[in-house]
Length: 178
Image (cartoon, rainbow, N blue to C red):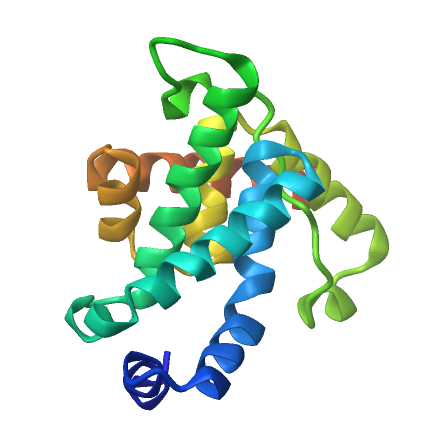
């Protein structure tokens, strides 16, 4: 994320804030949708995240990675939405999130991969265990550093590495048609 945009937002520049929303909304939306599985709730979560950014604009320069911070806020708001929807008095952990679903978005890579392979790959990703799929999504699709994933999910970097390795092995087997 460009430091100039963050600085301009911290100074109250609404145009810079609109730019941030245009750049980050799609990714945050897909992430929230993968957790809550409701388009309306995911849209509300993303809207709430940007409200938090605007409220915190005066201290944005103190945040080391605004994108990671927004992702963590998105995650917390999604879990809160799940808690509210399912009325779980003891809370919801990452292990309790059932059917984490990644909303697929077209990418330039899809032009290279055949439709059949892309379909197999999507099926393989969907067949991964929920926690593994979640970690894989953060690491490989959103390109988050393992350390940030570990901090966000409250797991070790080794656990993040294990889940990513497991997912990559499973996807390799599918693409090789083993």
